[in-house]
Image: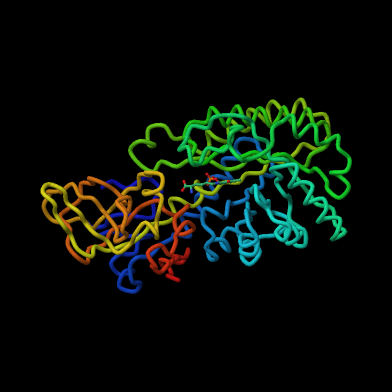
Length: 414
Ligand code: LLP
């Protein structure tokens, strides 16, 4: 049970702590299952991402946190105070971002299915950009803008036709994926005047997938984005390189994940050192980022407790009070997350499956984990769930949504 660098979790005298507070004392105040977040870890990761960009000579980066990773209001308020913008994909996320105090001028609206109503809301709020994913969407934005007598700010999302190496459910940058537009279709649309009566092309964007550990496809896609910007041949305010940088969840990723520093160096070499030199307009487009996971994943743990244990021949199960409805990544993507318990005297561990109460075999947080012998009431922490954790929770099996608790910078629970 080793704990990763920069995790809010730690052991002190064998007792599990989160942000230096004993987990047992938190669980006395909050009934399991619940999500526990560290504002400090969140802000540290945001700061690391921002500083890595600045150190790579990326000037005035705009970091639009992808709300789908974690729309918790308290955490978003904290990011807003730190200067973050937002990447949103629905009117619900638009409202949440604005409620958190994120400025509309720092909000980019992605997604293939924006409705007329959502576009209207974005226009009224005065968002930074609609990242357009089809010509049909552009037509709708243009007509909604005309009705509201506003100019819509749009950026095309390029589909760069690359194979991002990640789980197939979250790879988004190839032509068979529903996302973005092919280069030739973008260039063609620029000649169609009727599309541009009430819209301004202010940028270009991309997003090729999530949990990217190898950055080969990212490099290729960024090069494509730069070359498209040159072919577009008009002043652009920004290039949005999307999100996607992965985190080291476990033994597999640990060997090959890329750091924010390595990621920024690739972006800088493609855009600052190369593209900026060829770009003929005075004002160089600023670089926009849409990270979600790399900012939020480490900041959260899912805390659940053992309801009972069970044994079938040599198979040991710990049945916990949290289920796949609360945290679905392990079931949906076969994702690995560290599982921690209090340390117990004696060194003997048992290979245990940590399973939930839901009526599906996939309702499992981890199989054959070497853990001390568990009993009812023992606390279990599933690590690195601050991204795509609560935001993907459901009421499956008519269960309540899990609670969320934030440990503030001052160490207060709320
Ligand atoms: N921008 C766009 C347009 C996106 O679609 C996404 C994520 C992001 C930014 C943020 O990507 P990130 O930096 O977090 O990788 N539920 C899956 C992940 C789905 C990602 C969807 N789009 C998971 O739990 O792994």
